[in-house]
Each structure stands twice: as C-alpha cells, then as structure tokens.
Length: 258
Image 1 (cartoon, rainbow, N blue to C red):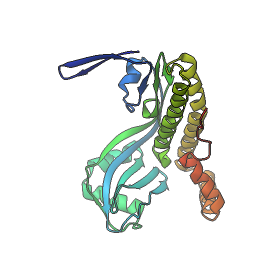
Image 2 (cartoon, rainbow, N blue to C red):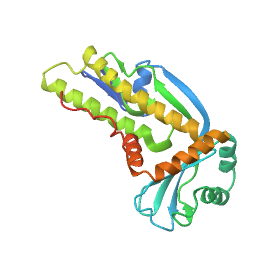
Image 3 (cartoon, rainbow, N blue to C red):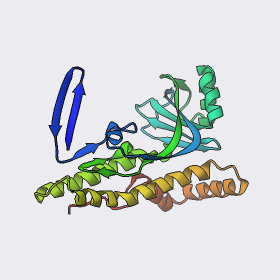
Image 4 (spheres, one colour):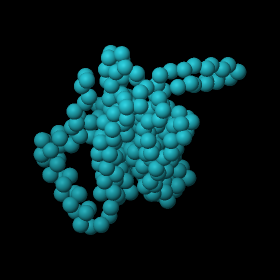
C-alpha cells in the first residue's frame, strides 16, 4: 500500500503492508478507497450542547425516552454534562432558532430536576440523524474501522462501543498474525477480520435501530407495552444487568489470542 501525505508545502510518500482507516464519519481513507455507503435517514435531528448542573452528576449518565426521541446527559465533569437531544426536524429547528433561555427552559422541562437547575455553557448545534454503513470494511491492504465504517443513532451510545470492539478485534488479530510472521495485509487475513466483525455489527445496529423505532412510536398499544416493559425491567435486577452488559458489549465474547 503506497500512501502520499501532504501538510502545508511538505509532502511525504511512504508504503506499508496495511492501511487502517480510523478517521471518523467523514473518512478520507474510505473515500480514497472508493468504498460506497448505504444511508438510511431516521427523520430525526440531534441537538448537541453542554450544560452545567447545580447538583453533581456523580459520574452518572442519564437517558430519557420521549415521544420525539431520547434525551441523554453524559457526564464530562462533576457538574458538567454533554447533551444529546433527539427531536423531530421541525422541533429542532424551532429550538435552534429560539433564544438560549427558551431552549434551556424546554430542556429543563424535558429532563426534570434530577441534577438541579441546568445552565448552558457551550453553543447549541444540530445535525440530521441517519444510519450509515460502509458497503465494505476492507479493500486491497486496507481496512476501515469505527465511524469510518458505521455511524449509528446516538441512542444508548452503541456506536462508540462498537468502534472500540472493532479496535480490540483488529489489534488482537494483528498481534497474532505478526507473531506468526504472516502478512498483516493479506487478503484472507482481512476477509477473516471482516467476517468476524460482521455479526457484531449486524446485531448492534439491529438493536439500536429497533430501539429507536420502538421508543419513537406513539401507537397506543406499543407505548403501553413499552412502559410496562420498562417498569418490569426496573424491578428485575438480573434483566437490567443483562441489558447493561449487552449495551456495553460484554454479552458477546471478546476476542482471545489465536
């Protein structure tokens, strides 16, 4: 694999046995490899900001499910939390166009006072939500991982966890391949990695996708079943622990030395 890099007026040409593209959702590596994407729009918009709370978050993440989509507050300090608020495009536009005071009042109303009074500490911004998957994880002596290969709805933070598992699987296999003095860019090696990751990708994406469709559905029967299920889950520690392990990626076996 030959790679040409440019920085300002400097150019660097190099070569490697394997190129790993871990450069995010707008991956230049993926684009240069001509790997297409499959995109499914959710018809929802994410509103992003950071808030300061009058009460400490105690390093706890909160996620509330509403009719318009989930609202998550993720701890980034004792009194600071990142906000990821899913809304319909129309509601999102109104919240973005309104004053910060109006935005904060709606946010407080939606989240409640579990963390006391909230105040904005960073500007608001928004982006449309879609499920985006690369049509291939691999190319000739190249592999893409993390958001370069999959971008999920932010519900339950599954995209980050899935990307971490991509890294673990690839690092484990590279270590074993190198220890056996085998080619780390060989086609059969990369194909085996992609096959191993496909099942986890499919399962996690299906879980996230179904979660969104269930919690964004206002049909009375589904809403009632959803509410009963959440109540039961809250009173069944074993079920709650199982769901938590699944969400964190511990439900499946992590790679072991080959």
